[in-house]
Length: 369
Image (tube, rainbow, N blue to C red):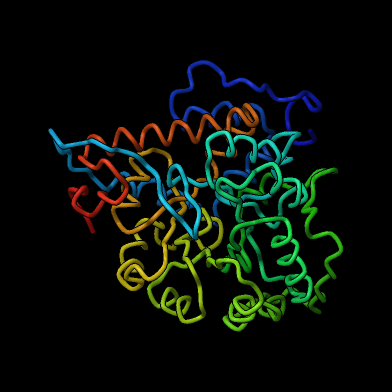
């Protein structure tokens, strides 16, 4: 691979010994990727303050242990949009998996399926959406992440492809109109030959602005009207990903959203925004259970999953750790990352006296917001 050291050598398909937490994958992934590819995976916007705060915010939350709890009938099952999930840990949509492994999104789908984990496939995947959906299966079915493209007709055509391929929901990302990731700029990141957003082939080029003025470049940026149009165009559940305020959450409900993903895009869009977990409580209060809330950004431990559920999320999405596992051990690495998080979640539930997901609430937090 162009951006892997030892180009052309297939990454190992076995998990290296000594990996006992998802954090252990990071140095192995760093060793396999060149500087530019690593910068693409890890970079946050600007100074990376929000990306770092996604992690430290979880560390600031403390847990209450509960002893001698009745743990009969324990389990991590939940239902989302008519389908059963074995656990509340989903694979977040991330782009260009061929940067990390030659089997690309097919390896990710294989790993997710092995753990019966929900999978959200990026519109900027480096593999066509149809074979990924077929491989991911239907227990539960994968979801498709959509951006509103400057050509609205192309956006609608991509939506129809996702419907026909059997995706179970549409996750409309609303927070990534423009961004600057200085770490990528310093590393000179460019997509290498053979890596592209294949599902966007044939998309008409956006008209180029006469100058580099940001507002001119955003003349075709999506709006709430686009959300309404997509809501009217599909019967699939529609989630909005990138909601970070209670006001926008209420607007999402008014626009017909079936779910909300509280997300700052892994700190890759607006530096200085709060951590996703800090934004969750006021959004949960505004939504008041009317639609499921999911959260991404900073999940590195099963205890992080527990904390997100305690503050109102129904499930979480995991991005960078899955990419680390993919880079190191392909499908096996993806499955192992998900397995580690699920095992840690089960232990944390037992230690806090919560036999089921429904038993998790703010009471498990020692210093709840």
